[in-house]
Image (cartoon, rainbow, N blue to C red):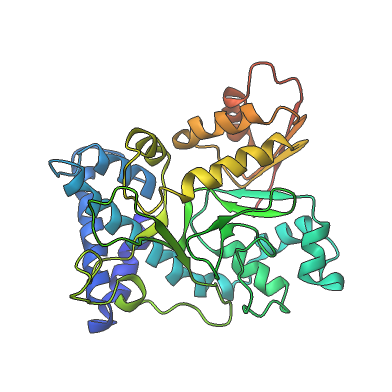
Amino acid sequence: MFTQLAQFQKHLEHLGHDAVKLHKLVAQTLALVKKLHQQDESVTTLDTLARLIHEGKAGGKNMQERYPLVVAAKVSVAALFLFLEREALEKELPGYRQLLIRVFPDIPKVGFRRAIELSRHRILTFNYDRLFELAFRQYFPEFDGTEALYCPTVLNSGLLWCCAEKLEIDPNKFSFLKLHGSAGFYGDTLETNPSNKNTRIEHTHTIPDPKTPPTITDAEFFNPDNPADPIHSGKPKPVLITFPHEKDHLTQYTDNLLPFKNYTPKIWDHAHQFVSQAQEIQILGYSCPKADAQALESLFAAAKTCRRYLIENPSPGDVCQRLHSLLPKDFSGEVVCKEVSF
């Protein structure tokens, strides 16, 4: 990831004044990674970087000083993912197209509305990128973006365009839940007074468009300068990306003003509800990493009616071993592994 981020930094240099703030955040994030490597810390993903920052390994006397470093890292990686969308689209997203064929069989004949009604699948993803959404729009060209992509009538991901504060998921139909949030999702407090601990969080998002890749500029990732709103003026937009250790932080500090304070519990509650209804769980291209172990154990414990786990992965043996260590001891179903290149 951070090799890609360094290449992205070079691209930002060519944008000049249009991306001065973003270039600064990326440079700051890469400097933190270098510092942690010099301390013999293993930093390979955004999750591990954020955890080490929260633990004080990258400096900062308290959370008030450390949190902006985490925000900078989240914005940097979100911008990188949005930047890489153009290249991914040029490759036509073949792996995701195969997934869509599996989830929505006979699609082109019935259109996206009927396909969603017929699907028996629920998708839980730990990815921050928007490749599934982009592939969905390519697969269903009749979806023109005038409807809220993440609303209950389409991807059923919890976010509403018409009511940005509201998180709504229909539990009885196809759903695409982004458990760790996403690039292009934001969470803003609706109260400019930070002493108001009961402030509401407004969730906003953009609609991924395969024909018009996002513009990578400061205007996309920073709030406009506004002297009347010193809390948000000129600051990075709070990207709605969450990490496993931040879920614990929400529980420990219930009066927090973090942008993901409402999103995370709602999404995970529905994830548990969906797996509790599953007869089969398919784990596609996901490695069941140690960082997600606690969350996965919780999900698998809720999957009481699941009788079969299917693993499809370039290295399914390693994933299978980790999966068995996370399953409830009383699980008596089968685990099937398939070696697949995506």
